[in-house]
Length: 279
Ligand SMILES: C[S@@+](CC[C@H](N)C(=O)[O-])C[C@H]1O[C@@H](n2cnc3c(N)ncnc32)[C@H](O)[C@@H]1O
Image (cartoon, rainbow, N blue to C red; front, side, top):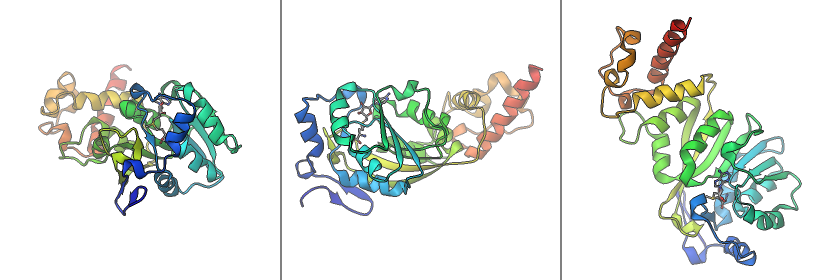
């Protein structure tokens, strides 16, 4: 079959058959890909189209893309008419992005590290194929910037952790932190053969919808790290310095057995007690 095979649940590519636009641009500008920046680029714009379709963008929306790469996804976002702010840390990609995107006045390119970005519009929609080597810190940034929705392509195994329910082996810190702030849904898997170069892993596209939750994120992260510090130990063990706060609470379970709501309830108890003790 020519090109990437499209199926309902999984998009597969056959490498050579995929649209070579991305490779052509890289060749034209002599750009060498940087593994340490997680540079695996979509080589099939049908996947970019499918991601953008799922986002249901309108010209009134503000979209933030983390890691524009060679602009395959950015160009599809631009076509929706939404205001697109695309971050890219690697300035050597500027000639490609400028050639591909200069015809779209609704696109703003920001050549900076998204992890250090200061003026990200709060409450925007994030649509990104994110660099896999920094998925954890980027997910935390997505929460901090209060994106109202985030449609992100991530490594399949990380997707499983984000989507995991209590009692599953993959349920842990990342599942709890993300699911506290977002309703999470899997959209579809993408085969490794749809990227240049082919990564060693498959990908998943997940859809995150912001919940009306207002928590002190820094404190919450600290609490969740603490209860998952020794994953196989009970809450009693992990919360040892604070046992007096939890008198009368059953701490015989492990954090991985608790729902997100139960964890938020314990966190609120802990936070209130610490605030009271400080007067
Ligand atoms: C997985 S590639 C995706 C590229 C493109 N969006 C696509 O789908 O083909 C991730 C991109 O993020 C960029 N990147 C890595 N770390 C970054 C950071 N801290 N801030 C902004 N961009 C970053 C990389 O240079 C790379 O271009």
